[in-house]
Image (cartoon, rainbow, N blue to C red):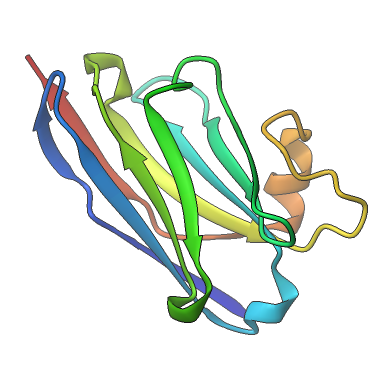
Length: 131
């Protein structure tokens, strides 16, 4: 069993920064593909950033490229999402998720169904960006 706990959400001004953390516990060796997702009110959940733990390869949604960075700290079993130059459209609930990927299909292009049915999810943390 894998448990994920997000933290670091809150309020920020447009143009500001926040850093989200996702601590992974339990059977951590069963997860090597980590993703950050977000969901705004009335919208579907969307992928934001993905990190393949085996080689630290990262990929991002076009809407956040150049502004968000996903990293991992293996010693702390924690995945981070550094969010800079925040925009009002970044507002939403942010979730981290993890799954095991044996075929290297671990990127922002991976089918959402893989995350929906095969991943462990955190409870989410709210991010609100105001002008």
